[in-house]
Length: 111
Length: 112
Image (cartoon, rainbow over all chains, first blue to last red; front, side, top):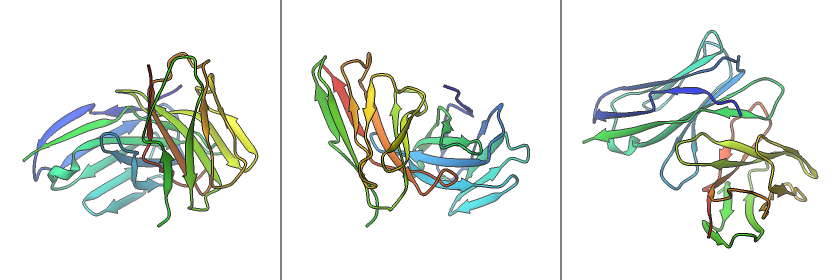
């Protein structure tokens, strides 16, 4: 099945630094979701975006629904060790229950 | 507390055997989903159900079967026809198709 292009695939950052990651697609989406997954656990929903241009925050996390509707961005400010994990984006086209998932960005925070 | 439960957490089965993975939710969500996750890959949709007694195939339904007899429950059977069943299986639910999905803790299936 189709998958989103999510980048970077992995990143190592120092504690306190800001982090940016993004997802791009060749298809237009009506909804973008961002998840965090810890090893051996199910993904946890971080932020849901439903309108083009929408900017939504959840604590230190901020995500944006791209104006073109083909991309989305997630920023983490002032990273801490517990931010370690895999971050997934997911996009949905209108009129369907199917979401397309990115391959994930693996984040490691160095104390 | 509302949420999604999956059992068991770890499951081992011998090649050629069918096995059923449990998924229960008390969120009163209409839609439920099963995904498969392999190392280094995104989630792939196996089956989904919009409403009780109705379900549709996802992208990789071959070798799997589901039922939706109750709103709260959406069990997945991995049959012997599934060529490569060893994977991490995730169940999810949502209020409707336009809303975010919530995932359970997952079941790791290993075929010996």
